[in-house]
Length: 322
Image (tube, rainbow, N blue to C red; front, side, top):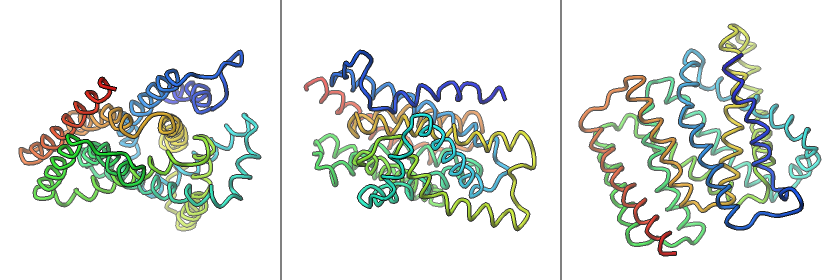
């Protein structure tokens, strides 16, 4: 039980951070305070995600689909409990009947479920480096999505960075084609998820509750199938069962924080913050779990890191100018 004490203590903080209510004494946040809050919450989310592979590695004996199904159910139960405490359940049922709210969240639910499934597969099948590559690409995917859908303009040096990144992907395709799909799927699914959540008409807590509620029928159907087939891992061994139950906390805490940050700061800023978790994931796969990093794969990473360095330098320069 000691493993879960810290995440449980973080729950009240995350509920507060996800809330859009005014500050005490009736004072609302200034724009600068909101930006600082968004940066802090986003950083917390990426630190959480950076260490998630260690958690998932402990579930290596569980089929990835069951891990995701348990994650959906545990997350839904936790979100319903949080909304009940906040007396927000009536808003959840009202949003569920609103097509303009449900349709975008159905799309974001598909994106996050895809991301979870690919990521769990990558971790348990010893492809953490491929997963980290996908998340290294994600900031540049965010830039492209912001340009295509949010009319954010691509500055000249950003265009150079994107071009170099594509060269790095091409090099990776020539050296590690068997795992490139993992990187591409993670980058695109999470980039699209962030875009949809940024433009979503509901807050972070309501959005995550609706997403897990929409995914729950498929998750419960799968779990019912493996129960009937006698292959359900949950409940067979105490440690594994506790870890599977804890997936709700491991999922909801960082996602609430990310969704809060996505509604406050720009996609570009989110792209900068993502380097924290990407680096932690990379070094976890390489140094802790000993995944091979040959010269060709390292070269492709180096090309992509160069693109990210150019992108970061240009973004910081533009901020200083502004």
